[in-house]
Amino acid sequence: MSHDRHSYAEPALVRTTHLELALDLDFDAKVLAGTATHTLAWSGPGDRLVLDTRDLTILAVEGAADGDEWVPLEYSLAVSDNELGSALTVRTRGHERVRVSYRTAPTATGLQWLEPSMTAGGMMPFMFSQSQAIHARSWVPVQDTPGVRFSYAAHVTAPPELMVLMSADNGTASRRTGSFDVVMPEPIPSYLLAIAAGDLVFEPIGEHSGVWAEPEMAKRAATEFCDTEEMMRVTEALFGPYRWGRYDILVLPPSFPYGGMENPRMTFATPTVVIGDKSLVSVVAHELAHSWSGNLVTQDSWDDIWLNEGFTSYVENRIVEAVYGNELAVMETAIKQHATVIKLDPLSPAEQAVELPGLNHRSQYHGTSGLGPLKGAWFLSWLEERFTRETFDPFLRGYFDRFAFRSINSEDFVRHLQEQLLDKHPGTVTEAEVAAWLAEPGIPAFAERAVSARFEVVDELRERWLTTGELPDGAKHWTTQEWLRFLDAAPDVLTAAQLQQLDREYALTGTANGEIARRWYSIVAASAYTPAYEELADFLTRVGRMKLILPVYKALATTQPGHDFATHLFSKARPGYHPITTAAVLKILGS
Ligand code: BES
Ligand code: ZN
Picture 1 (tube, rainbow, N blue to C red):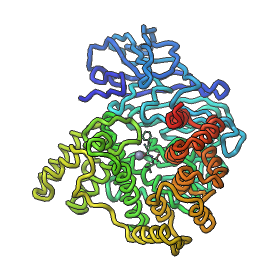
Picture 2 (picture 1 turned 90 degrees about the vertical axis):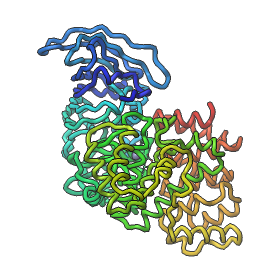
Picture 3 (picture 1 turned 135 degrees about the horizontal axis):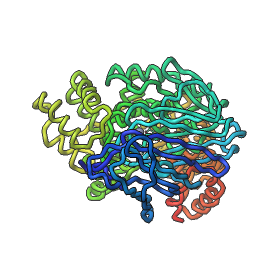
């Protein structure tokens, strides 16, 4: 069993099999307080239980050996490590259950507490969690490693005007009584623990899916995500049953730091994809895909995150193809591959080895950065092409079946690959080719790039515009993806005249499309095109999704005036940002 270096827990000795939470949400204090009761399965001597915590105040720890007799237990909280937090070690005697009474800090890294003014409605406060990768420990004392899985039940009390939702069986009725009880009957890893509370209403999409959002947003979001039910059907047809009951989407306020988070039964999503034309709904395909890759078959440590995000990126693309057609799927693959290549291009082979390890290499990250996930998706597409879908699709389905509700590592996958695909179809790929993907840096030379005919046209028109100033023909009718391509492969810096020409024709400044905005404002910032700075500032203040705003901050930081502007802007935007967004911006600004 591999040990997870991102956790102090000792799953070889003891594992939580079930967790019972009793929590109260205190919006005035920005504190969540209560108890976490662990049901334990011991394989060691039973003399200690180590849980992960970060910035938690531990009020008491009790144990029950038989019956419901709770007895106080001795415990100690280690000095906090900056990255990992602080190990809570409990002196046990093989107790079947251990109950921790605790409260969170207002600065808990896994929670954001929003003032009413930071919501769409402006009247009620809001709070939400973001546990992945190692932030669950900041709101629940838990074995915070994806190698441990447990079911959970929660009893939550909250101000009576608010709705509380968790990654569990919330149902569809918005009954606000101040008291909520939910259950997640399937064993999940800690990073999928999730909670949110606010002025939330339900809007159905279909029989098995719906949207939770603030009243202002619910109907629009349900319309944007109207294909969710079909996405579920096509994924089931390809890769086997959806095993989580309902699939609902919670649309969060704009400070949500990610595009989406695959909390089981309740994907958390950024409102920046609700723009009225469905052009960014591959985020839903992605989070839904995690119901198979990640949530059902889980990496047992963050070193193997490619098993999760790489497979998901691949499955996402298959869903997009099945629902929206090959042309869009190819464009989206090409956009992802372009991002990979761009990141690698300037790097020497030695640097590439660090940026892009073989798939089995320990990742330096426990986040989305790093290219393992992109390389993993590319690897799977390549396998698919070599073996053909007729063979590859049942293989992948078999993989999800075999490892369902288990946490595995890369070696488990590679063994399965060898047995179920390579050995059964000898002569289709060579060992050297597989090794090139799994063990060598960079993208193998024999990997084929996705070719989009539409993008070839966009590329030509961009080059013509850059050399002659002639505006791209037909651009007024481009899809979002064509715009993304146009901007992705444009020079980092353009002249004021060029930017003004584009803006006059296509009104890019002020666009409601966050993916276009992040690329456009990055060029604006790197080009110091000040006429667009007011809208740029508005974007960076309104939105907290890291993928959209960090590139713009980076581009601003390349010049001194830009850096000054960004610093000033950040001081105003900061109260609205999530703690992890704040940390990321501070890193870019070097303060
Ligand atoms: N699970 C990730 C988000 C994540 C990864 C959070 C690592 C914390 C650490 C989620 O599924 C994801 O990948 N979201 C993407 C959207 C997707 C379409 C690529 C995002 O947030 O942009
Ligand atoms: Zn993902």
